[in-house]
Length: 353
Image 1 (cartoon, rainbow, N blue to C red):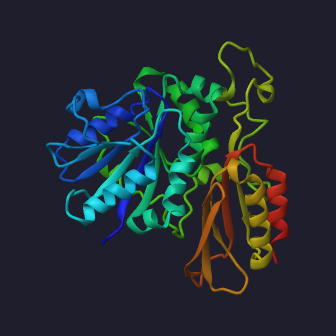
Image 2 (image 1 turned 120 degrees about the vertical axis):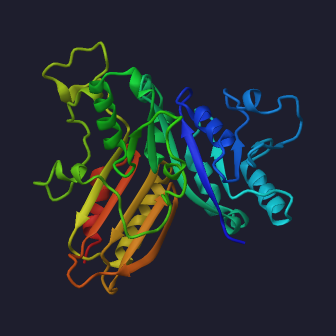
Image 3 (image 1 turned 135 degrees about the vertical axis):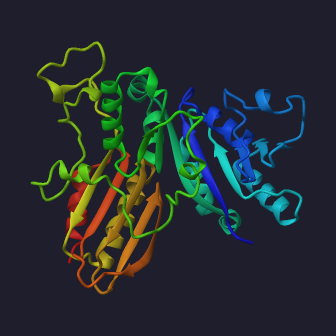
């Protein structure tokens, strides 16, 4: 049986997850989708489009979709769905998991790699994060869960963009970009986003493409390493409303703890040194490392090495061969909470041949 693609949908309360899900569940899109709802969510879909007085855990929709609430843990629910699909009791092509508004998507993502039975049935496609433009600045300032959700994203959808000014939206997008330069951002009205932009994004594919916005890399090209905005960013999105920061941009009231930075080098890595260093780093800082990914130039192989990880889980794979006219180099992006950038950059530098 082909692997069942799974999408994790996350975002703070009020960001529009339910609106997007209702659309997925009610629209005649010709796909059979199983939605797993975390029951503790404040905004249950059930009352609106489902029969609310049923005790059944799995409810069939008129357009062939099914909706199911997590009564126990996610693993059990996923195993149950896969088994019913194998037996022909349920027919669905993909799974969408809605996390609660305050959930950290990390453990949900890890379920797909740590549990062999789940890994044999499902393929984690991507983590989608919804951000509410109207309340995002406050949520990102006040809640680490909101910042984590941005750090984990493969794709960011910004809802309620029509409720803020163009300047506010630009400032928000700038801020999100520096927290997570890998994830494309789109302002959306949920009635209008094409499902092709929601599914089959392959955010967890180990592929040779490392999506980082090229402008993000340009900002600091005089330096050997590119860095994300941190302490010295005086962009308006980082200033708290109501505080006058004129002329003191880099002393702004808050500096996001979820940050990203990029390492680039045209020297090859020594495989053993790099493995030792990354192993040690993941051991110590794993819980604070949200997503990291790289396309590496390794000594001793003519092929690119692709690696990525979530928290303590790290994997690598041989990619395509370097083309004859291609400049061989390594590019890595790390997204995490208060990661010791200097230690990481120095360690990576010391792992080069």
